[in-house]
Amino acid sequence: MERKGFWYALIMQNETIKVVYEEERFLVVEKPAGLPTVPLARNPEGPSLLTWLRHDFPEVADSGGMHAHEGLILHRLDTETCGLVLAARDRESYRLIQEAQGNKLFEKTYIAATAPGQRLDGFPPLPGTWGASGEPFTVESRFRPYGRKGAQVRPVIESSSHYAQVKGGAVWYATTVTPLGVNDCGDLLYQCTIVRGFRHQVRCHLAWTGYPIRGDAAYGGVEDEVLHLAAVSIRFPHPETKRMCKVDWEGSPAWTFRIT
Image 1: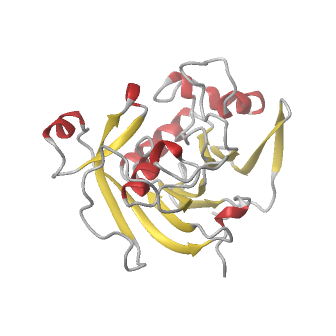
Image 2 (image 1 turned 120 degrees about the vertical axis):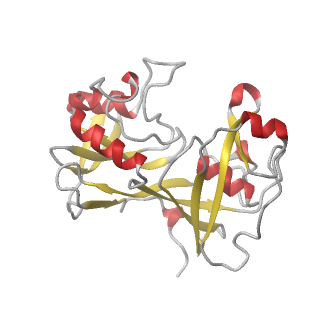
């Protein structure tokens, strides 16, 4: 499947939500930074990507998904993360793509701009010298909630403390990291790919390596008005044909571009 060569805008309350790709069974949209993917528990009537989409695509708000308030949104981005979000347009498509996700067939790729950051509490010692060779590497861990009301997460590995082991979940999550060079601001760019996602996974894993994301103060990143993390590509089986679909974000922010 090839991405369509056109965009169109859904205008809501002086904001623009761009539909990057649309089919009868699903659509892919561009979420701007600062907008929640789905309504927040603390502000269920507030703005969100789903709230705005349902005006022109009411079917995506169907409560047949895993969590009723998330409609048929198939994955969430953090509020401050920008980029591609996939939504099903019927319950069967939602079920089939969720099933593919459980089988690690739903691949999500991000680009992050990073810089050396401060070492934070709660991280276990590094199990290797990630990134030292400039070659792709994989960061893998379980996760546990951390900080006030569990607002952050921390990796859990075999060498973590007994307390961390008890608090950690049972599932291991992997982030494949590929160095891309630097952008025109001198930040190190990393491509990060996941097939099973956990809250703050990419942010936490990069901070663990010593290179947190620019603008990610929660994880020791250099201060900036914008979180420099963008979901730039998704790949998943088509719910009808089963062929792998790939949609790329051609409108990604300028900071994602490396110096050539």
